[in-house]
Length: 101
Image 1 (cartoon, rainbow, N blue to C red):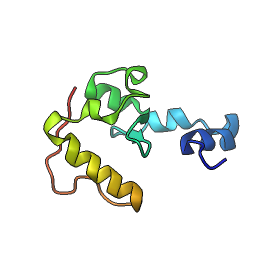
Image 2: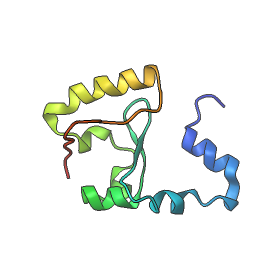
Image 3: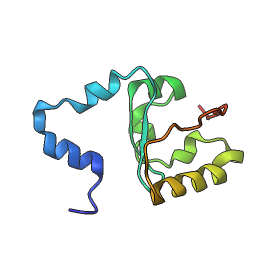
Image 4: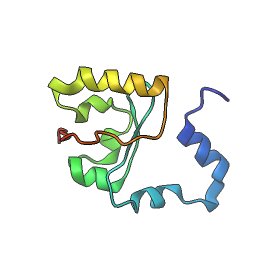
């Protein structure tokens, strides 16, 4: 199924033996996973603490809810470039990152 969300597909393939959510919540850093449209698909517990939003309030919302207004257009352009050619790379390397909470 090509249009299926990768996270949903991983959960479908892994079955109940792989406890994906507890592993993601155990990460020491905040994690936000979005789709190509910039919609939040997954957050971990550190993200909830950092942004002071419950995950249910973030999932399904545009990532822009966490991005300061003056950076949204630039960030959207960076996101589009990434999804055109996805590669492992550091995000915001050498930059001071800002977000809303």
